[in-house]
Structures are given as structure tokens and as C-alpha cells.
Length: 131
Image 1 (cartoon, rainbow, N blue to C red):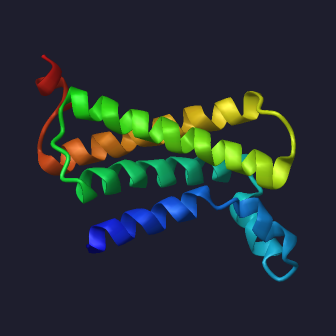
Image 2 (image 1 turned 135 degrees about the vertical axis):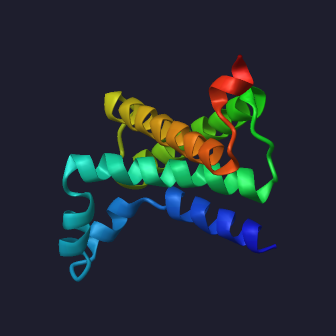
């Protein structure tokens, strides 16, 4: 049960439009420091989506192979698109564009990092599985 609570909490954290917190005067300096620099934005996306892959694999006891890796990447793509869509509606009020596609790309890179961490942790090399 705990693994599902962790996964659900992580998903809620990911989908919440953090930019809304910047509207609160006491939190604004911290949020500007945390996500103000573009590189921090990329790092945060990478960490969130690497964590998502790890939590999904753990919560559902997913064995790691190329097929399940593809399913995990598809799940990340769905969550990433939902997150970007929600942010557009909640804070940006404009149609999707290049910044959202770029963020989704960064999210997928984070997912690949999460997969590599899982393979390293479980002692399985992706190259061995594919070859």
C-alpha cells in the first residue's frame, strides 16, 4: 500500500503547477531561486521523471526488459503531456508550443536516466537484454 501512496503523492507533486506558488509573496524568493534559472527547471524535470519511472517500476513490480521499458516511457510521455497541458491551462493561458515540446524531451531524458538507474540497481544491463 505504501508504494501506491508514494506513487500517487509523486504524481500529484508533478502535475501541480509550481508556477502558481510564485504568486504567493512569502514563497516567491524561494521559488525564484529554485526554478528561476532554466537549468534548475531542467534538473527538476529530470529528477521528477526519473523518480516517476523508478516509482512506477517499484509500485507495480515491473520486470525490466525492452518491452517494459517502452511501456514505462509511454507512461512518462502521457504524464509529461498531461503536466504540460495542465500548466498551460492553469498558468500560461496560451496554446502549446516549443517550450512544452522541449520540456517533454527533458522529461523523457529524465525517464531514460531513471531506467538506467533501475538497471544498475537490479544488476541488469540494457545492452545484455537487447542483444
